[in-house]
Amino acid sequence: MDTLLRGGRVIDPKTGSDRIADLLITEGRVAAVGDALTAPVDADIVDATGLIVGPGFVDLHSHVHSIAGQRLQAMDGVTTALDLEAGLMPIAEALARAAADGRPLNYGFSASWSQARAYAHLDRVPVADFAASMDLLGTPEWQRASSPAERRRWLSLLEDELGAGALGIGVLMGYAPRSDPDEYLELARLAAAAHAPTFTHVRELIEADPRTPIDGSEELVRAAAETGAAMHHCHVNSTSLRHIDRVLALLDRSRAAGSRVTVEAYPYGAGSTAIGAFFLAPEKLKGLGITPSSLVLVDTGERIADEARLREVRATDPGAACIVTFLDETDPLDRAHLHRALAYPDSIVASDAMPISWAETDGRTVYEQRDWPLPSGGHTHPRTAGTFTKSLRLMVVESGTWSWLEAFRRCSFLPARVLDEVSSGMRGKGHLAVGADADIVVLDPATLTDRATYSDPTRPSRGIRYLFVHGTPVVHAGEIVTEALPGRPVRGNA
Image 1 (cartoon, rainbow, N blue to C red):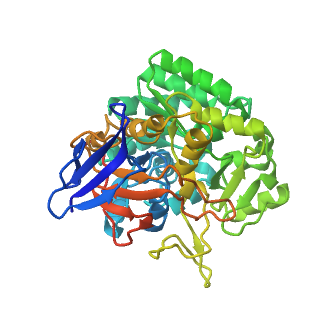
Image 2: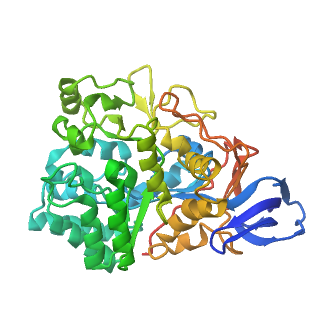
């Protein structure tokens, strides 16, 4: 059905336009933007007076692979949710699973460096499942430096995945920080030759552990300079901690020298990962400025009491998801660190959204629910539900650091542009030019806010009035359209 959005404040970050106008959606695309447009016969007319109309948010870093999780992200303004930091492998299986189940939002994946290395080192056959990827994080054997034969094997596998539609290479270097830095350079050369970006969770900083083979952020900018690859620095807030000023200055120098380096951040002082991660070993916590009590198990709510309990859980259930508090959001200095990560010029908002899990009475854990509102008892990180609305609340509404135009540039336009070279399908996203994909968010600036908390992480955000994916309403009048599954795959250029 054609849709006419009447009289909204239409913001297009591509052209810098911010004006009151009508916007017409026809056959899944933006058909016209202008004054007093004539509605086609039988068009759905939406009164957007007092509302902001902009391109839907593009999340480069979402580990949500379910209808339930994507509905939470839809209520946060997201129209495209991509898993690019970790990725999934095989890419064909990941895309086929999503297509078979249906998705409210557009979806896509990078080639998984960690899974490729596990195959090369352990003959562990890749499975396109995020729970299997979490279990892998506590398996040490894939994390060591590769032999020449192993390196050739996983590089070949990554190259094949790029040819099969992966949107770049996802590199969980922070989980294998004792691997040979030369391997990362070789990976970057492969990416450059394939005209594909890399998405890196960098290895630890020199301040966290002076024994690291190379400072994680230094490694990324060195690879960008030496190979010409497009290098994306994932969640700079959580890997830089209280050293954010030093890291941002490093990125400044790299970008000024012409390197293709992009960066993302999210507005929370806690992250989430598998408790068996290398950097959560008891002896590593001091370098991060945290203690075992900074860790809380997601599924049970247990706060880790001491080193003995941490060692026990890491040994018995290394893939268990946990919340890791690394900055205190109630402390003005720590809040300032988070603010600077988001305020950094061209910093992209990305959620690192995590799966939602429910414990069944028979002891099973399930990761999908078709009911809406979501059943109670779901466990996840609040960033799954609130990253974009919280960023807008903090940076536009409360501090005035961003204009609304700048907010859409960072949440929609810039993330889409990271993928222009690798995916022609992304070129119609992140803006509102005539002919662009009708992936559109309509929000109410007077009521927009995040509502998810660490104790109640699945509360949907408020203020997203309408959300269209390829012209199909996924959110209508502030409510999820439960039958709408219009999401399409975003593929790399074969």
